[in-house]
Length: 125
Image (cartoon, rainbow, N blue to C red; front, side):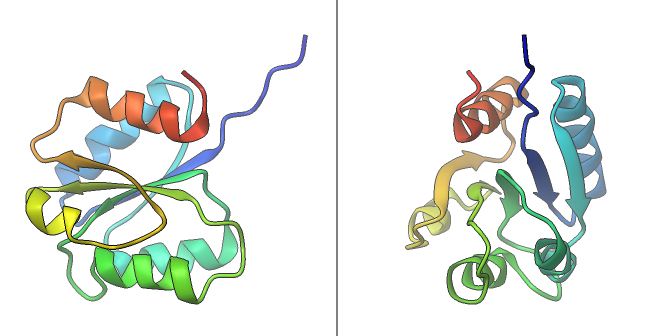
């Protein structure tokens, strides 16, 4: 019996506590996880790696979530990962017109719901 390796997840959030907590939970769920502190770091990681999903905060320093979405949709040649927005500004998130947005998760979020969204993005329910 072969075991399908779960795709990598990139967590992008400038809040250290959220980023570390989400990383621990997803690793416990057997996802391969990397993280970035802002959109600039995320774009650097995206140039060298493929991810099945990105958990993305919208409001960050240097390059925000909108900048990452722009990069994914206009500058990246590799397959696009599904983006799960994690934001306190749900209304603003729903105004983002992007093909890559899979789900929007309001902060503070339910960690079980976050895990389900990541599984859904990878088709691993």
